[in-house]
Length: 106
Image (tube, rainbow, N blue to C red; front, side, top):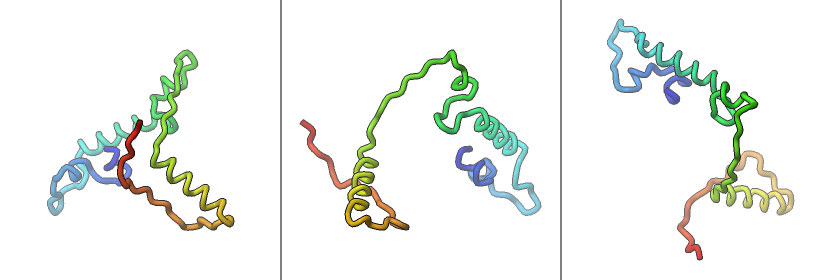
């Protein structure tokens, strides 16, 4: 549903149902699934993805773990280097991250 609902695609159609001429595009089951999916989205924090009832409760404790995405790190380092070089204009420029191999870690 996370693909179908935002795009307005009935789940049954996404799963392969062919809509016959004169037949309703949305089945009752499709509507129920879409409404339930939206209800769950409305009850979830857009920032952390946890249920609002849980993450808005001051009695619940959380811990945060820091992780590094090395692909994002390489992109951000390249962006900083480009900006530092004569104040390069990055307007409209997209930095594409491509995997080129693996390093041997010691």
